[in-house]
Length: 252
Ligand SMILES: [Zn+2]
Image (cartoon, rainbow, N blue to C red; front, side):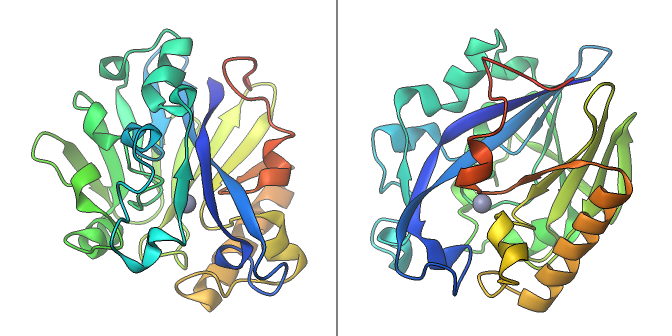
């Protein structure tokens, strides 16, 4: 199994969004990633799909006219389009067999429309919570051509790939645990943990349900310490600079 980190641009926002009480009022650029996994049988799994590629031309596309318009501003170069990142790895969106959405926010499901051949795995309670909910812009994922398989709780989806519920960021959020041959265990937290500062400053009030998020974050950290695992956070600019990012590197 090989894991590729696909960098899909930044989201410009106040640091309070992810870690209240740490650097309030500081404007920051937070990285947005998707993850491509090539399994041993060559099937392809994508974890999250990033912000819509249409933000390259129109950063205000999603939030224009809403309260979030100044709070969340996508910053994407043409290279940050999911299409471009996949093409760098010689992957066509129609080659992707499965997609796991940690959740359906605009920065995690923004290119679901490209992946019409895939089966999508989403927790059932997240799917139901997000349906017709403007906090989860439905135009990117609630589309007739897309095939969702709804998951209830923890599930071993493939050999060496499990999903587990990590609520708190939103109802039905899930994280992904991978077993790689050389790297060992990798935990793709999604937004269950935004950044290291959530742990270091016990800062969880940026989450929809802070106490549930705190429990989920600590559960992941405990799991990671038991397996000597690498945790990849949802939006950590400091950690991002330490990652092997596609197309220059990968994890095996
Ligand atoms: Zn996010």
